Length: 244
Image (tube, rainbow, N blue to C red; front, side, top):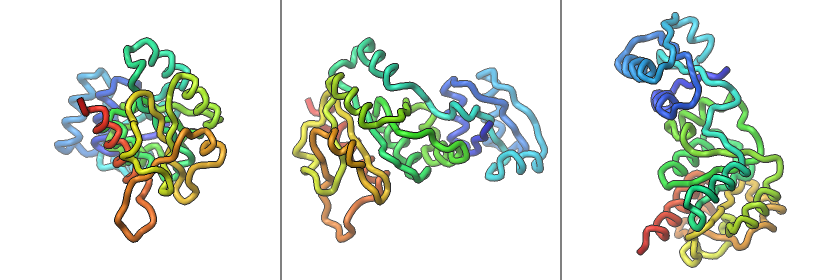
């Protein structure tokens, strides 16, 4: 069992309707009170606990914490389920998948999920399970977006990229030596690979790419933080798709 303590993370998880609870309340302040009302509306059990008890369970709490099963802190699915649903939900020609290749910093992971929610990403695909102890950081940094953005995990990302290709997706890797982002048509079935902090995109995944794309820059520092770059990339995809 893990505990979400961020107010936004707790609120969005309750609103998502996914299993959670109980909601533990130690300090009945205004935010805790409103979250208790929301939990009651969603039939989620609320318990009053002592501050010392909550300190032990969730040291970073602000008077409130929501219990979540370790195996499902996010909106989890699988690549097979996504592709099957993709064929049946009327979006056959328009989808955006993000592949995260060893994004190890939970703050970056959460910030990327927040951008995914804002710019309508359909699926986030990663290699390994996020370590349970980082789930709270991911949820808090994403401002609750982790409860909404569909996420899938696989043991073999290159194989998953090939499955996406078979389903008609174009695969683009984000790399500062790639083609200018604006020169590529990113509409339709698109998957973008973001490489790990410092290590970039692994060789096998790079070989899966149809092309590499780069964000044009005027700065003296050689690259953007991966979560910042993600927001720029996702915005350009959305911008292209909004053009009549």
